[in-house]
Image (cartoon, rainbow, N blue to C red; front, side, top):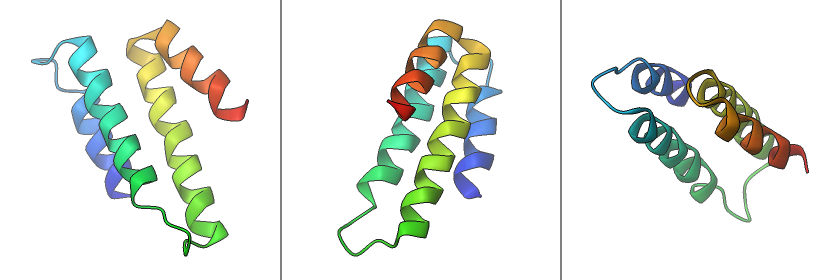
Length: 76
């Protein structure tokens, strides 16, 4: 839940450019995947994927082409 709250704050920070907000949210996503390991449970992996989908939808709200690209590749 912390990632979702932090991502909302980042997306709402209008002092940052759209590109900077997208980069910051993608960095959160990368950190989530980096924290997964071979000992991660299926539930943990599904949670990270669910969080990614949420983050990509947030990105789509401020940068539609990038958000669509990310969402299309998530399921692909």
